[in-house]
Image 1 (cartoon, rainbow over the protein chains, first blue to last red):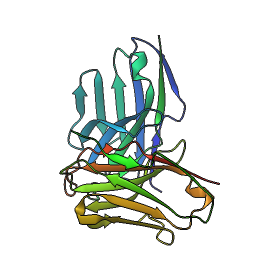
Image 2 (cartoon, one colour):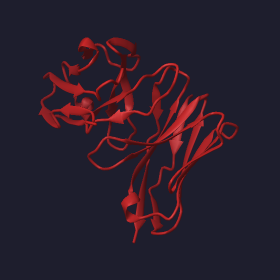
Image 3 (tube, each protein chain N blue to C red):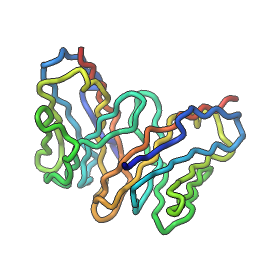
Length: 112
Length: 116
């Protein structure tokens, strides 16, 4: 069956450390993978998009990797801050015309 | 630029009643999406419009849910009759375009529906 799995446990880290979130998928062949941030009571906010032929993408303190062999994407936040505390969602496009399939999200908490 | 607008923000209804949600996407965005997000889960696509045509409604429970996008701009999502399991946040999103490219989606704040 098709599955997208993110870290099921909440991630708690200390301010200044690097947070690494995992997104694994099964029985999909995505052309793209996107990462979103969602704060309580709000809609998701787009962060990064990476294509299947790209290994890595960076934006300020954010870095995403995409390994189509391992069927995995890693999302890194370097020099994390308490303001980075939120739920992070990965979403993939299964070559179906822009339709996104979301993972369940990982809650990140950055302690000062 | 103005973001995606949704109303109402909250709605409480009894089971078997009907409810409607409204969405105004970002100006110029051709594609509009309605998602259902149950607590603790990621958003699940219900329906995708490109301009005023339906691209994907494979996960829309058509016996009780309906949606339309008038003149390729605003959209409404209706539930009639509501069930307890429809309690969720209903998110509207828009993007510049969709197939064959994938674009980032811009989400509204959502409508939190509670069915009692």
